[in-house]
Length: 256
Image 1 (cartoon, rainbow, N blue to C red):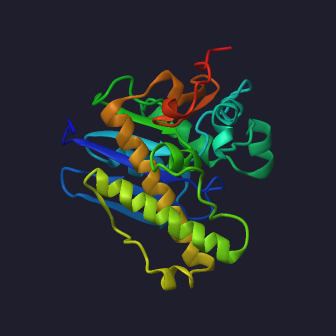
Image 2 (image 1 turned 180 degrees about the vertical axis):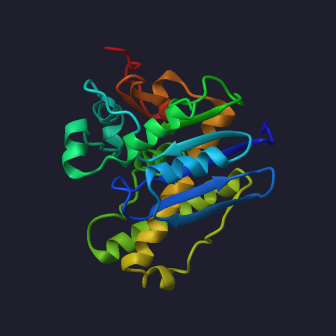
């Protein structure tokens, strides 16, 4: 796969408030073939410090807006390009995030930028350095996991959400296996999944979303990105969806 041993790929399903648990995943193929996942309640400063302490090169894919400029159009472009696959993203603006207290993403972005990180994917495969970019797990279930449409596991009836979570888990485990990795949470038996509720179900969602973000970081680190994998602009904020090109014939995003 062309893997360079001193590179680590991280996925973070970020709590936008910083006051609830976030999901974390780490791929360190030099030491293990297991995708490690966990949840923890950390502030943006604490997450930035943890990322900064990782050795070697790092590519981090984060499910949260890291840059929110006044001309942000990332969600609109993503919805226009992939909406027919059931991938819907709703516009976020700085004023809205401030009013709702959902500022952990931009705060994390500022901390990483101050530490010298690039808030963009690597410009080429196997690039050296430290990179963090925003991604979107719902889109990744289609582009990386091969789902026809994103599994529904965050809304609807409890039975439907459990079924969607089990389907998502199976898709993710299969995709990881095809790359030579295994998840540290093996697919639960259906009767166990059927009993999940409350915090246990939310913790599993967060860990799976983080693992999928880590696979997005891996895909970008290994293969780079195409212009059609990028929605929005670097200045106002962009969402990176590896392999989106295969699903859309939309025009390439352009700077305003």
